Image (cartoon, rainbow, N blue to C red):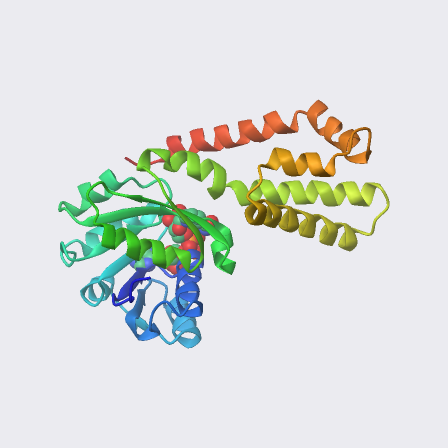
Length: 272
Ligand SMILES: NC(=O)c1ccc[n+]([C@@H]2O[C@H](COP(=O)([O-])OP(=O)(O)OC[C@H]3O[C@@H](n4cnc5c(N)ncnc54)[C@H](OP(=O)(O)O)[C@@H]3O)[C@@H](O)[C@H]2O)c1
């Protein structure tokens, strides 16, 4: 691991911005004195400065002047304004990271009108509890050192993978939207439990722990899902009867289509 000697500045300290700050502090990756934030919301800044021992800047350009790595975590609609606010202060020594969904690196470069070291990141909401999945798409030519810094930052809130930017719409459709698909599955599983007579709170715990345990089995054993499924489904047993109903209900095809449609929508909403 690199000795994390860079100063990090976050613009936009909403849900994802706070997830990053708390991950960075919890993981002890960085001295909190090296973390700065800026946000247009006064209440948000007050809340954050009371909760974390970090520096709150009133203006984003001031933050950029006092940071080596700048992470933009505002809504996509606010990106143009933020880029305009900071473009004069950004220079070739900065590493800029954007987590704004659908905002391409070409959009960012066009609005900055200068070349900077730039990485697009697509985290997902479990980042808020340190179990996120982030895909990083560095602009070609980004130094290995800067990619390593970005990996370390996002590793503080979960797992990290590196992919080409062309895959980010698909990533949005899968791991970005994925938590919502999983919650829907848990809701349905819980409703199934209630249908067969379990109290709702009990059914919810059984469903949630089953999802959690099964995911952990996949991660820890490294076995393919098909093999682990086979271990549960004894021929002629209860599980195959359940699996057969899921196949009749076209659940597998529906999930494939959900990822496909969400990817298409990400493409439609994307800003080049
Ligand atoms: N939530 C997710 O699961 C998820 C997953 C992947 C990527 N993302 C991306 O992460 C980004 C942040 O999402 P979020 O859910 O954390 O949003 P959020 O909770 O709305 O936080 C954004 C913060 O930025 C502030 N802001 C707006 N304009 C600003 C400006 N010009 N300068 C400084 N601060 C400004 C907002 O203040 P106001 O509220 O006053 O406008 C708000 O406090 C989005 O681009 C989103 O696409 C989110």
